[in-house]
Image 1 (spheres, rainbow, N blue to C red):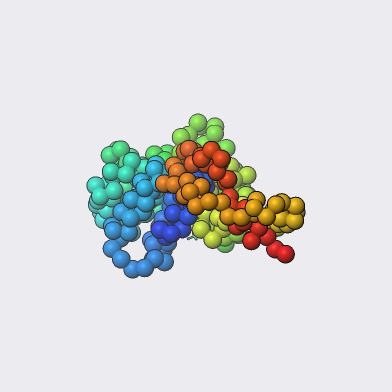
Image 2 (image 1 turned 60 degrees about the vertical axis):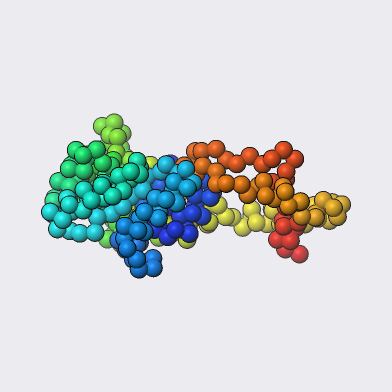
Length: 272
Ligand code: E4P
């Protein structure tokens, strides 16, 4: 079970990288269109540079933005040429008859493919048969048509298991927090999550209540110097260069004797 970030926003991607949980990034033309208008290649390069800055060797899906069969092939080759230096570049190709040819051609050239916009069992299966490394099933959009997205993910999972198929199932088109849980439980290898849901994945009102209680109780008990902010040197050590953010990499280890959080800051955050 992995979480990808479904965003082309540099700040949102960086927020995820700083927290170490992101196992990949997915973009599409609509997601890109939410960003400030600029050169497509420059924007994608900035995402790659950001991933490299965090030593995040994670899949980055970049989608074709044409539907013309010849142009799709040409564009895929250009992506491989322009961004292929990033080893985990994944070219996103929508499912379709002409598109299968593009998927096959990219795979023949050694590129990786995320076959996107899959809404049905048969689309996911044929995409995998054409060699797609990832098949993206669109949870929210499937449900819009009255079909059971969880059932489709379960069926694809079962067939992949029976074949020992190397393709991975990505579930996208997440509309609610609960979609993430249900997609994972249905058998998705990966759920790609829009940034607004990411902080919610680690939030719970009872957690907030428990932490606030701990802070209140400690503040009432501790000596005043315990509650003072930690010295600047310890604070600097805590905020050293980015730790690896490949989803498994090492986490920065606090210096010996350094506190992991300034008690003062926690005490300030605690409600009265
Ligand atoms: C993921 O890779 C997809 O591009 C994305 O989740 C699409 O979802 P939508 O239904 O919000 O367009």
